[in-house]
Length: 310
Image (cartoon, rainbow, N blue to C red; front, side, top):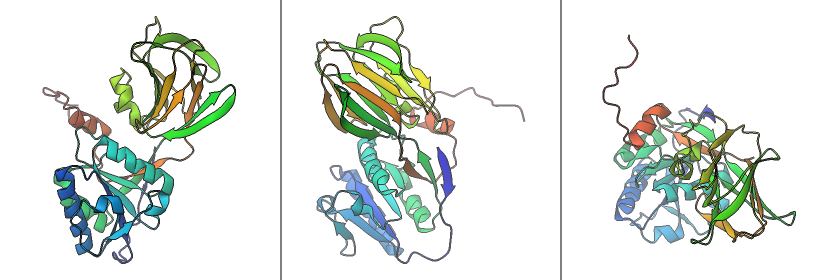
């Protein structure tokens, strides 16, 4: 993870545009989006939305609408503000990675580790964006490829994790895991999660993996409900290449990237995961430690802590 401070110049808001992405299926998100839009416009900052989302929002005529859902939709924007839960934030990450534009998440869901602010912070978010009081950090991603019969048949990426999972509920998936070209363990189970430090608090955490601080550069491999003597979570170098081979006589599996993009894995398929060439840039408003964020998000009990003597 690398961090840099965005320009703090005093040139004013002229010509600045913010791309807004929201989960319009929730009334709270609609109200939040309207509040952010009006706050930015009031300060002379342009707002751009996707046309299919704008249909659900009561928007002023000054809002710019775009129909294209690719990276071109964000071209020329200073920030991507995302309002929603984890799924919406991961959708925003797709725009952020493809365009290089930083993403600032506002959590309207439950945990929201990718979010920088909560629903009650909307006015502060607008103020910080207007005055450019935010920093940008880069989060590691994963590059993922699938081989079948030695040929690359699919490529993808992930911010949180790439998971190889069983497709048939009633059958285990037999796999062999590999690190840096050497086999580690064969087992049957529900699958394997390969994650970034950012994803260590997501699916990998639910599967029993460790929490890894974002500034640690590493890759994680976490078995899911494995039937094996050795099926422990592994933390490897960020330069490692992780691989999961679906065994020839096992039922088909499935690859999920961030729980959003999926492809079927036939028996004999091989999934390779390495550090992504393109990071995702996240805008940060706070300097609070990750430890404090972890305690707050998971409501961890810390009563009785006295701290180091002064």
